[in-house]
Image (cartoon, rainbow, N blue to C red; front, side):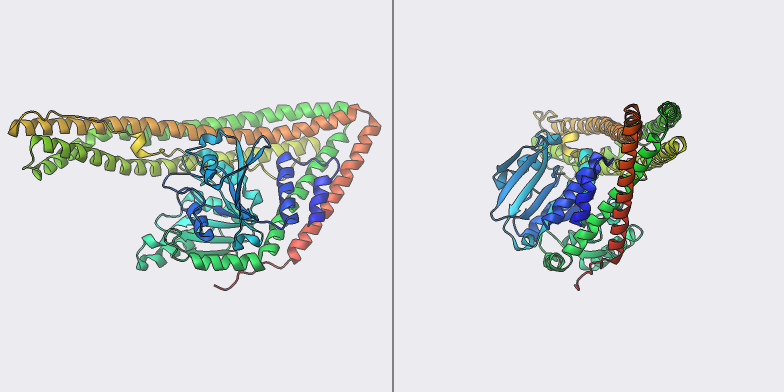
Length: 570
C-alpha cells in the first residue's frame, strides 16, 4: 500500500487536485506510522466528548449542554501526557492539558479566531498503545455551521466511525446523512445509542428498534454494530471498551488498509481521467484549442445562468418559508395567547390569596419569568423543527439541481474537447443541507427577561390589585416582545444559513469550471512552447494515464481479495 501511495503522490506532472493530494499524504502517513483513526461522529449535544472521557476513564475533553467542540481533537498514544496545538499557519505549540478548552471550544475560541488546525492529546493509555487514535469532531447541525463543515472535511481521514446517537432523541435527517456518508467511505461503523439511562428499561428496546429501523436504508448492517450505553453513568461502557480493544487488536490493520485503499483507488481514477482530458486538449492545434475554449466558455455561461436561476428559486422559497412559517405565525402569537395567559395568571393569583402585596409581587415576578421562559422554550423548539424541515427540503432540491449542473459542466467539456475532465463531483455541500444550522444559541440569552415591575407600596386589596395589574401588563408585554425578538432571530439565522449553503454550492460549480480552465490553459501553454514540447507532455500524460490505470486495477484486485475484517463476538 505504501508503494502505491508513494507512486500516486510522486507521479511526475500528474494533475491531482490539492485537496486530493493532501488527503493521500495524510493516508500515507497513517499507513507508514500504523495509526488508525476511529472518528467519533454525531450531532451536537449527543455526548461524544463525554463518551471519549468515559472510554479513557479521564476527564479530558470539555463537556456541557451547549455546542462545545469546534476543532478536531485527536487523542493518541504518547510516552507522557501532553497537548500539542497545531495552527493553520504551520506553527505547533505544546500546552498544558488543562488549556485544551481554550483552543477547541466555541466559547473560548469563537469562530476559531486563534487559527487552530488541530489539537492533539497524547496519553499513556492501553487502548491507544495499539495504534488506535480517537478523534473528537465538532457536532453537525449545531448553530455553528462551520462545525458541520469541519466534521465533514475530516471524513476522508476516517478509517472507522463511532456514530453517537441520543436515546431520547429521534434519529435526525442530518444524522442519517452523515452516517450514510461515513458508511460509503469506511469499512466499519459502530453505532452508539448514548444516554440510555434516561429511559425506563421497558423503553430501551423500543428505542434501539427505532434506531435500527431509522438507519436501515442508510447503513449496510454487515458493517454496523449497535451499542446501548450511558457515558455519564458508565452503564454499558465496558462492553464497548472490550469491543474496541478487540477491534484494535484483530481488525485495525485490515480496516486501515481497506479505508486507505478506497481513497487511493478514487485518486488514481481521478488522475487518469484528468490526464486523459488534458491529452485531448493538447492534441488539438493551438488555433482550434483556442476556438474550443471559447465555445466552452459560451456554453458554460448558460450553465452559470441556470445555476443562478436555481439559487434565485432557493432564495424565493426561503423567503416564502420565512413569511409563512415564521413572520405571520409569530405576529399573531401574542394576540392569540392573551386569553390563555390572563386566565393562567388569575388562577395563580387565586392560589396566593393570603399573600401581602409585596410578597405577591415577588411571587408573580418569578411566575411570569418562569411562564414566559417555559412557553418560549417550547415555541422555539416547535418553530425550529417546522422551519428546519422545510429549509432542508428546499436546500436538498437546490443541491440536486446543482449536481445536475455539475454533471452538465463535465458533459460540455467532453462534448467540446472529446473527454471528461473528472468523474468525481466536488463534495462541498452536495449531500449536506444545513439542517438546524440556524438554531438559536440559547433561549435564555436570546430572549432575555424584562426586569422589574409593579408598585407594592399600597396596602391590602388596593395594593394586590395594582400588583396583579402590573404583572398582567408585564406578562403580555414580555410575550409580545419575545415573539418579535424570536421572529427577528429566526429570520436572521434562516437567511444566514441559506446564504452559506448557496455560497458553498455556487463555489462547487465555479471550482469545477476553474479546474477545466486550468487544464485548458496548461494545454495551450504547452502548445505555445512548440510541437516538440507538446509531444513530450503528451507522452508524459499517456504514461500517467497508463500508470494510474494500472495502480487503480491493482487496488481493485487487492481490495477484492483482501479479507474483510470480521466483527468480534459480543
